[in-house]
Length: 337
Image (cartoon, rainbow, N blue to C red; front, top):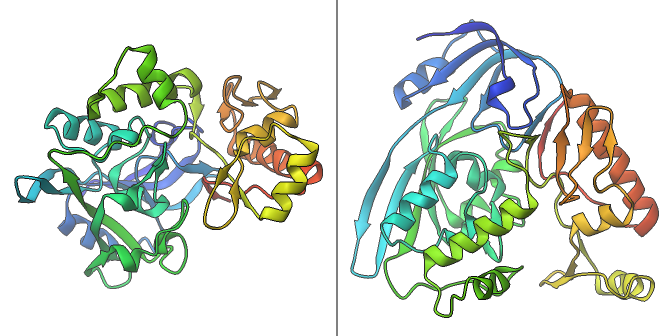
């Protein structure tokens, strides 16, 4: 077991923030994971996966456990469907590409989302009209206190909008080790009506799209709006899109007739990026922190930014949106203070 001391986490978080871990260990297997959890010499432990949905604002006085469990296997297969078990350390976008190469449908709208598979259920990741829960069967998670593996079905995960059991009652109690999905092998149900997918398909003269065509469209759209974390440090969408009541929406519509919206069961979802842009933040720089020039929902590292600088910018944006629109926007990113 190779435990390292005083290790920089700059290359382990997509913001590229240079904080240090007091101790660091890479987890490559389930037995190793159990043994590390049993180590009494390291009472404080911090779980880190792909680092794509986290804002580190300080050095971590803990044993940072980097989850690197690998493997994709077919659990069950029929003529119409396939059930895949994917280990937590598999890169999400590489998994999507792996399924497309084999003609498996269901993940194409979730192309190019940064991060690893194990964190996908925590966030119930979603994009362009599809959420993880739509293809989710179950996940296995190790209970931190006991070291026992526990199975969670869809119901017990309590999925919501960018939300789950693991962000609430289960927070800090489990480490997801694998996720099981049910995907289609034919007669794929395509979701092309959300965002600019149909427009992108038309631009490419695609009349009868395949799952690969949908994925290509999503990738093109995301690349046109979102910066590559390898070039500009970021965590993708920093804030959730707020859902407001019909009454609040009608009031907003009077003052801003062109406000974009999506009707949901709870009310009206307003793009947080639009609210932030209306407040004048898009493309602005605040020291080493900034708001991306093409997508106001993305906060970026414009130099050797600190997590505190990003946090202060996020709080400034939240305050301005609340003052201007009387709408509260909340971070999608997990902030470690």
